[in-house]
Image (cartoon, rainbow, N blue to C red; front, side):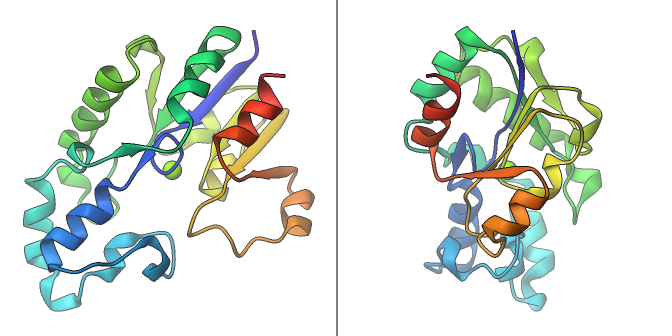
Length: 186
Ligand SMILES: [Mg+2]
């Protein structure tokens, strides 16, 4: 069986982090308002301290939803491949407050993808240390490392990369779970 390293946030599920930001700011931001990768850059400087307190006391996975098609395709992939979910949990801004994030991710995965054995969750920031055949991630830098196939999951923060740039890095963009199904399940 070929080994897959599959990212969680913005590949399997999304929406939770933006929900918390909007709830905190009483705003209606969408992904299109985010300039880079980090949604928390929508938080005004003067509210940063309050935001940190708010964030550590809320579970973004209470508001996370599956991306369209994710559940069904992952279920099929899990039968045909040696599938691992790999997700970083260290907070860039508050590393000392990262432990609840790990637990929230674990709980969301075990509740929502019960057919994946928890021993196949990998919680790591440097994803390239994990050896696998296929990598699927929305963050380009997470596709570093050896793999026969590297799939960049289309997302608000990665649309600036042209096909030519991705070709040069051996990376293929996928626009959703139906693309992954076509590539890996036919
Ligand atoms: Mg991600």
